[in-house]
Image (cartoon, rainbow, N blue to C red; front, side, top):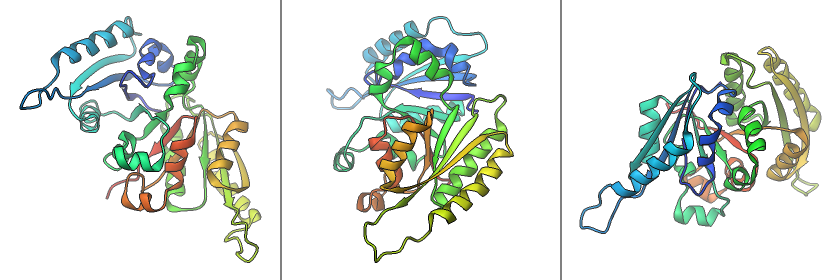
Length: 293
């Protein structure tokens, strides 16, 4: 699955707790784990410079938490000073990371537009998948609960589907992960197609539930060829609401999505489904940025 993973923490997102769960993350297929903390530049002087004191404090804090690691897992600690997104991209390239894990506070579209979002910025500067975890969720798990969560980060995925280019790209990415995994870290997925309910009788649906079901059946058959257990469901209503409801009832590990508009101008004009899901979902979200080319 994902063997080389970069975990980014600002110490307020709860992700630094994962330093205590390296053994459990290894059971999810991780062979190399890099814990990264970005320290803001010290700007009290005329020229901004690295804040060596805070860098040293963060390095000590992370090193103390990691302690003894399993011999089959390479654990690295990186603390650098500068802009978070630039540092994340640089460190991910150095270690050839296959997955970036980061936290994301719930925020409105307007707030995100004004102050920015690390995840939104990363999403159109890298092709590396991003696993976005809600800090409140990680912070409230007991050690026993977090042990299990780390072991089964990707065991069961919910895939929102609507026959768009982004949805088909998402399916192909999940299929590729299943084909390439060395063990059955990813075992199940559920395909859920939500037909938007316009509430207006004079506006016909572009696709009928039966047609959607037939398309999902074809995709199910294709994914089952790579040893995945697959369920399908067609719902009607508001996309984000229905997907979150489906997630609640499906016993899933994460919701997988892809989008080409997060953090771009068109997303400020018409908020994308993926962006809304990232704002409102308490479930982990596995985001696949579109390929550049």
